[in-house]
Amino acid sequence: MRLPLKYAAAALLTLSALLITPHSVRTGKKASHPKDLRDTLIRSAILLTDDENSEFKAGLNYVLLRKFCDEMHAGHDIRLSSGEEDWTDSLRGGKVDIIVAGLGDTLDTSGLSPTRDLEDSTVWLVRAGAEGKLHAMNMWLTSTFDSKEYLKLRSSFRTKGITGSGRISPYDEIIKTYAAKIGWDWKLIASVIYHESRFKIGVASDRGAVGLMQVVAGKYSAEYLLDPENNISVGTTYLDKLQKRYASVAADSMESKKFALAAFNAGEGRIDKCIKFATEKGVDPSSWDKVAELIPLMGDFDGRQTIAYVDGVLTTWYAWSKGF
Image (cartoon, rainbow, N blue to C red; front, side, top):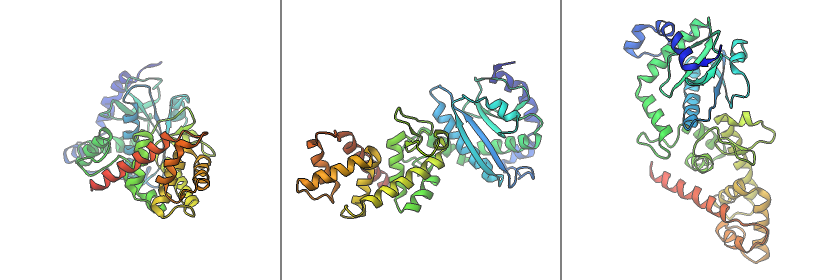
């Protein structure tokens, strides 16, 4: 039988609450690491909906699931889905271990058990009978919601840019990791993400660009690129490739970054043509600003959007750099 999830969740919520150790609730201590979770891979699916808060819910639950797995000393495989697949069947069949759904979603919840309600009107669901996992999840969620760290995390999804806690986005740690691998300032990568998606993980364009950095799905599937870490990994790797491509032309590393940003937005072919056009006109092609001045004279490329993109990313980066 299909009922709005809020009713199905309410019917089982009393049982879920009984599994929360009162002492843990009072003290706010972290949950222990059950033997059935430690060193395992926890597979999760976040169901995206069409409501206006979907991106906020998806992003917050993604970070919470990662933190839960990390603190349980378990691996994580988190997927975002538009709901085309019947994830409740996948959950019952053991293909995934947790699904995140909205309380107003109409789902067949037979054979499934919900955690306590999350503050963003979502709930985590597990297979009925997985008492140990449900117990650990409820304990962890309760202690997490009582922490100051959670309030800062939740605030970071509402506020774009530098927050009172010194954060730029909910994905700062991931950004720092992959920015370091290519030798870029992490705040510059964060600025790219801000201008590409405003830190919304489920964004997809008509051109097939997906996720935080709006990476075009090529050898990777769109589902793979919806994962924030995968997206940032692929996006920063591509930026590194672009910077190296223009290193022989650019005057210095900063100029090569500008050319990389331009190519990230417009494509390598168009920026190559811009450099060639500048060279033919006798203009120094090692400076992006000088090349950009000539772009309006090109007949086959209206580069105003690309010029504005590079300027916007750099302006945001400079502003955020002063914020630390």
